[in-house]
Image 1 (cartoon, rainbow, N blue to C red):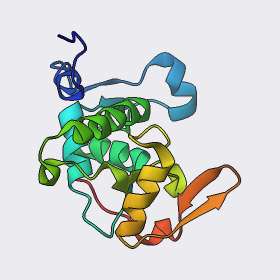
Image 2: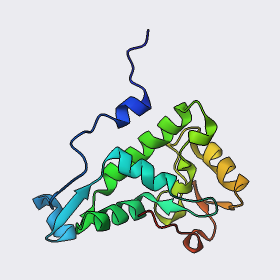
Image 3: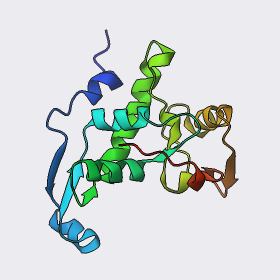
Image 4: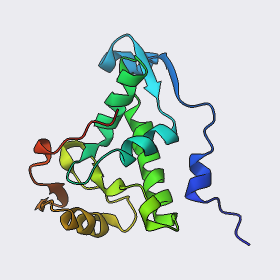
Length: 155
């Protein structure tokens, strides 16, 4: 029997989140005074589930929306990205396909595909193209064409 936790169990392992705290001193030079919202994995999953077919979101945009929801100055983008990664892998573990979070609609900044999602760039590209999006390569990176015209609100 494997002792490795499922992605779903990992998502459940943050009972102290969400929270809002003062922006840490090392971050104040870049972000200024104020507060920072750290999301819960459940909030990230709900935001990602809320992106309808034909629309797209970014990890940064979800983080900003969570900051607004918690009346914070900024959102903790790195934590948002980590939880988005975990949500994507938990979605692939889901037994029922209709219960899966459409994680492939959540991109990196500027509409860039995320190589760390299950199946890498190819799998995300296939899912996005099946929904009518056009993916273009720029150097070694891949982006959804006209990404800026397809934003979804996640709160």
